Length: 242
Image (cartoon, rainbow, N blue to C red; front, side, top):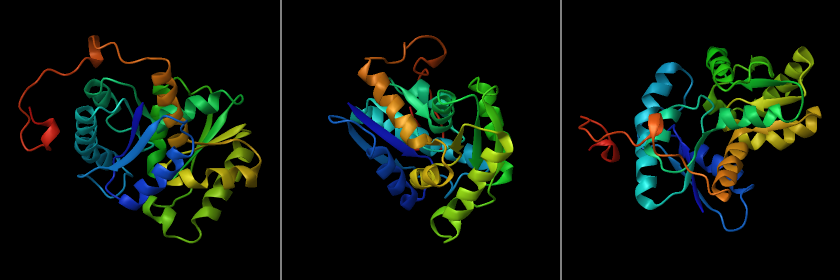
């Protein structure tokens, strides 16, 4: 099987980190690669950023379909463009927030989300509601680090770790969900520091896609997520023009 992880922002250094974390969990016989959106924002930290990231994300999905990719991970915690990507792809498409929250719900009564900027808390809450996770999600906390600072600020690891520790204490949670793909490589260290399960959505989504493909599951191809009818779209990347 072939899985592609799509970073919907345009920062290639982040894609490299994401790919390493995804590769660490795939099984033998699974081919995995990660791609960076060719158009869109350098990081995704607002509704506007999310909207601007979707054409680049869908172009990457379109190329994957032409290349025979079997399933996809959307490596941004806002899960941008998820419904549209599911229309475009024949195989499973999983967002990292969706996968991380569901994984955390298996590990205890409740989890906390630790994200980057406070302005993204509302989006995380909306997704918890959409995925039926509000009864498990005990709190959403921001560490007030910008996404790109996660790999450039020498204090980032400590800041995120302490935010996770404080979230568990404040919420009485059994697990922590990391609310940014750029935090993926911090997962194991934070878990060891704070002593509760810490879920990286990149790994969780990758394994979810792999499991669905192993079970031979694809979308039905009918109804809401059927392939969209062909039409002309002006000024969009190649795979979206038809």
